[in-house]
Amino acid sequence: MGILNLFNKKSASEAKGKIEIVNASEFRSAVEKKGVQLVDVRTPAEVNEGKIKNASHVDFFSPNFQQEIMRLNPKETVYIYCRSGNRSQKAAKIMLKLGFEHVIDLEGGYMNY
Image 1 (cartoon, rainbow, N blue to C red):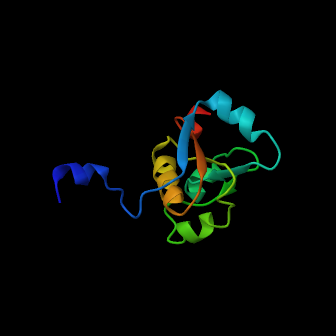
Image 2: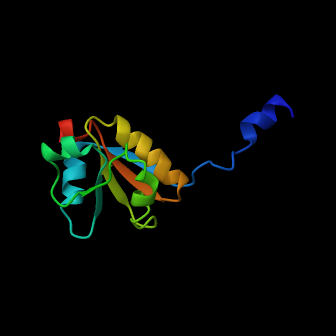
């Protein structure tokens, strides 16, 4: 296999969806609408300190994370956040591999909200 082929091949696990990172103002106005899929991927202890209204909780560190996140509709946009933006980016990438089409991540996480 030539070196050019390495760059042109797509892996079987490559995601087809898209991840967007938006600022707190955009995120807030979007998640205030009814029927939005909003997910907090922080730990239970972090959630107990406060969360965004109407957010579902799916702990990124849970061994059942993938099964729990699949309860959401992968065809609809999902808004996601964590404490600082690191875990939610990792979660969003996993979600795309699971077939989610559009994940919007809160820039800077809950600390920035």
